[in-house]
Length: 77
Image (tube, rainbow, N blue to C red):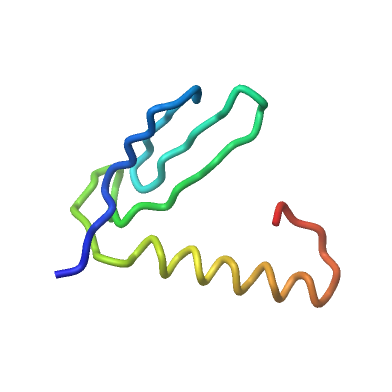
């Protein structure tokens, strides 16, 4: 069975907010980190987890940002 990421435990100087499917961290220098988990939600209710879901969503987003680079649209990456 594959590992499932449903919680992120971070011990450090950051403000932490846990959403339905993402973990959000704001650091002292103002930078933010958004971590996509494997949690699945519908109608504001967390239904469970799907192994690898966060990785697939991150890879899909990275692909689209690469496509934006080709047409020179600025973005955060």
